[in-house]
Amino acid sequence: MNRIAVFADVQNIYYTTRQAYGRQFDYRQCWQRISKQGEIVAAYAYATQRDDDKQLKFQSALKHIGFTVKLKPYITRSDGSAKGDWDVGIAIDVMAAAPDVDTIVLLSGDGDFDLLLDKVRTDYGVTAEVYGVPALTANSLIRAASVYHPVEQDLLQ
Picture 1 (cartoon, rainbow, N blue to C red):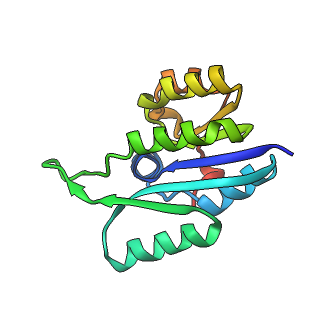
Picture 2: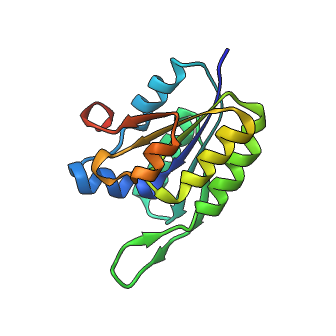
């Protein structure tokens, strides 16, 4: 059975689906799609910590789906956007999981992860799949992925 680890860059997915479609990403639908490919043995959602009711409900929903939610303090930039600075944390967790899985699934369009995917594909022979919004996913990340899944209407709420 294909062993799968999923890593969700929540901030990236939130902002790219909102910018491109004005809608929310459907984590449950994505989970169901991925789970048809094998057994999800690890799943992490990386988010910012804000203690408002909407965020707490969202985090609870992610946990109910099967994600382990990892939180960093919410930082507001001068332009009003938020940053959780999870890139290094995601990279560490992907590297730790790679020897024990067959497939790494990254939910992000962030081109900073292209070298990471190249590394785990080369060193561990894993399949590296990426889910990202087509217009807002770095071409380098798409090239680094074994399989690219465009986030379109069928993965939105």
